[in-house]
Every structure is written in C-alpha cells, then in structure tokens.
Amino acid sequence: MPAAANSGFRGRSVGGRPGGRMVEDHHAAAAALLLLEERARDPIVVTVTGAAGQIAYSLLFSLGKGDVFGPDQPILLRLFDVANQQERLNGVVMELTDCAFALVQGIVQTSTPDEAFYNADVAILVGSMPRREGMERADLLSKNGFIFRVQGESLDRVAKKTVKVLVVGNPANTNAYICCKSAPTIPDIQFTCLTMLDENRAKAQLARKLEVLPSQIKNVIIWGNHSATQYPDVSHAYVTGFDGSRTSIEEAISDQDYLHGKFVKCIQNRGQQVIRARKLSSAMSAAKAIGDHLGVWWRGTPEGEFTSMGVMSDGSYGIEAGIFYSQPVRVCEGAIEIVQDLPISQYSRERMDATKDELLAEIATASEVVGLY
Image 1 (cartoon, one colour):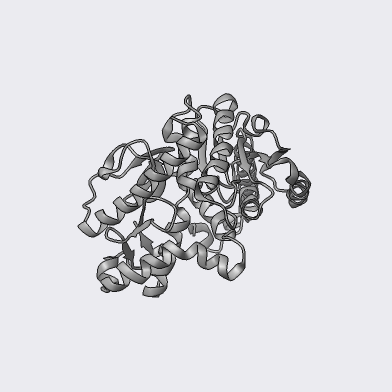
Image 2: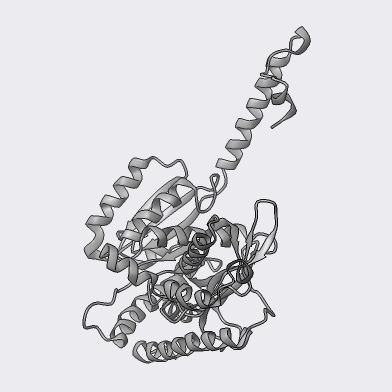
C-alpha cells in the first residue's frame, strides 16, 4: 500500500494548504488517459471452431472477460460450426451479446472455414468428430483427418502467418499433425495441441495428496499422446512452500507405488471417469485448460518453470522428429522452446516410447486414409 494511504491521506489539502484536490484530479485524469490508451490497442482476431459445443460454451465466457489474453486486450471473435449447428450457435452469439463484454469488439458467426479463419491471430480448433459406438479407430481418424485437413488448408490461405493454432479436438496430436501438414506456409512451431488438461489433472491429484494448493505444484511433465498411453512424469516436479522452499514431489510423497501406479492410471483414465459420471465428456475443465495453455503462450512461462504442450518434435529425448508429441516447453515473448537435457530414467524411457509408438501408428493410419504424405 502507498505511503499516502498508510498515513490516512485521502486527497485533501495537506497542512491546510490548497492544491490537494488538484493533485487528485490530475492523477485521475492521467489514469483515465492511460486506460483509454490501453483500450485503444488493436483487437486480435480469435477463431473458435466447434463454437456451438459445450467446451466452447465455457471457453467463450473466459475469452470475453479477458481471462485469457488479459483485461486490456480487445478481441474480435469468429465462431465456426457446421451448418446444422448454426441455430444453436446463434443462441450462443445472443448470449455473448447480452454479456456486453467491453473487450469483445465484434462477433462473426459462420459455417465457412475461410470466413472463420480470415486474418486470425489465434485459432482454437475445438470441433471434431467424436468416436461413436461401433466406430473403428481408422474411421475416426479418417473423419477427423478430413476436418483438420480442410481447416489447415483454410488457415494456410487466409490466416496470418503468425497465427497461434491450438488443436483441442481429439485425437488432438494426430489432428494437429494433419492440420500443420496442410498449412505449409505457416511455421510448424505455430501449431500446438492441448495437454494442459492432463497437466492440470496431475497437479490437482498431487495437491490433494499433499494437502496443498495446485498452484504450489510445479514442473509436472505430460509426455506423448493425449490418450490413455500418455505419461505424467513427476521426476522433475516440486512443491513450493509459502516460505519459498522447494521439495521434490518424489521426496514429498515418497511412495513410488503410488506415483508409478494409481497416480499414473488416474491421469491416463480421468477423461473416461468424467464421461462415466457426467454421461458427457470434460467441458469446464477442458475450457479452463485451453485458457491456461493460451495464457502461457501469450505471456510466457515464469522464470525457472516449464509447462507441457503438444508440439512438433525436433528429435529431442529420442522422439522421432516431425510428430506432435507433448513435451516440457518454455515460452518467452510468444516463442516456444522445448526444454533440453532433462535426465530420463529407464522407467520414464519405457513409457515415453510406448506413447510415441502409439502416435506413430496413428499418424501412419491417418496419413494413409487422408492421403497425406
């Protein structure tokens, strides 16, 4: 608190002399001018696909409030969904309008990819074909492969070359691969897929175990595919104390059976547990994770910390280059870099390879059915 506030100063003249009120008015005018200058910054174009769905319904509120890109960053929303969802999407647009968000400077509703992605700064690809009963995995990969090929081609035609693309729709890693390969003029590093939901789940479970806040858990890694083969790795993670102390998770919990057994299985299968309980897939937590992922990409990782993102592998950690694989990354001024030279145990190596092998098989199938080589 400023010294003036501590002394009980309330903007009146000091020592009986006039002028205090003038100082107060000057400060208020300066603050108002600063606010106007901040509000005058150019809006960014944010595209959301699957915009009539339940994940987007939770996500759009956070975007409009400024929780994702900041309280002083205006946005233009371009909301995409397929033709038979336009009536429902119209209802979403009405609600967004009724929220009267100060930061939302325009809303476009469309079922045309080029209109949705035109001049986009950020593209959040939520919509995908869900796996239905009796559907073979190759069929799922084929349906989604077509969707993300079309969207990648559209991004390549009309989006900014600096667009930040986050693929959420499952199978997210393979969909990101197809989308990226279909947009050859946009740098590979501008494409990511969501594993922040898995990271958040891991932090929440560790926090419950240790009876601390999830925000006290740092540097958990999600390796590999966003699937039941993903590997939540705590070997580099730590918990912070309110006194600034750090204790490794393995020391704080000191139960390898839990960390290599129940904990891993919980994170790998959490999505299915939610579906069994809700009869619907994760929505609120997925929307929160999207906001967290984009917030880190927008503002950067704190000093000494890293996070998990599905990014195109560069060969680090023995992972084949060219596949979208979740790895630890740092972000500075919007640039994503894979964290290098972390020691990998034999236990971790085996699980990292297992999820890599699943991804390679998925990509081979998808490339064949979509015609992507």
